[in-house]
Length: 322
Image 1: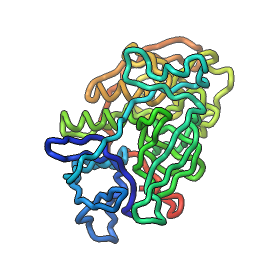
Image 2: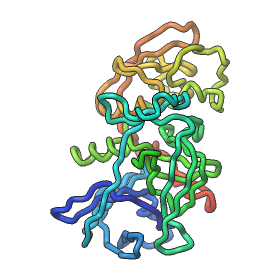
Image 3: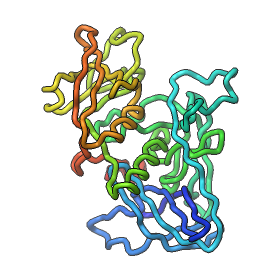
Image 4: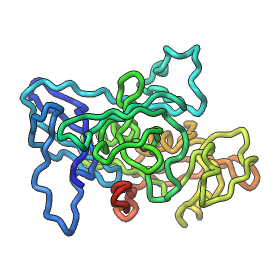
């Protein structure tokens, strides 16, 4: 229950201290078990190091460990992604990074490799290979809607390991599901960690709206969406919203196409803007479902409270959530 994978995201050769990213499940407290006294980090050769918890967030299921190594350790390169619905254009095969951007494109069918602990051997690593899919991971309202998915099936021990693209860069952190492998994109991990380093607080923005990327709207159990609704557009279809949000004019089946005058087509793109505006109000550009008119709606960006934290599957074997 308290074993998992992780990866070194930063290493300072002067101090020999490394920063390890992993899943918060490793530090999860259970009422029927004693408190966790130590977390140990093992390298592939079996060398063991004591780790200090630098940050632990159960909303995003992220754990950051500080480790004093006795050798130089090469960190892995995290890169933010840009989601693409269409397949990769062979003529642009060598142009994977957007001009003037640190984001790297992901296209449906792109190779994703999951690297993590192999449970049958103490220190072995195992790689799983699949492809990137733009399908929705889940419609359950308490689960993270920014998650991306790869088509391979991950092991429980590999949770917290890196999701790696075809260029060898880390595009997210692996989790586990019954039919695919969801991964938390690096966009969230990097912005969350930078926010914590700058403020000492965790970055958990919310506008109290559950939405689905429009191209996955037919999977919604919350609203029935005619194929013709918002035809020719792209954005985030509103499925559920709090009473306060509904009173401000945002309704089910409305389409969010912009935030603070920037185009948004996915929950991940919306998160990036919300993360910059915690404690402020944002202006949503919305296409109304009833008549197709465009309207601006201002909503406050709040910090998610504990009762509204994301739920995370404990494992496909044990069942349940934490």
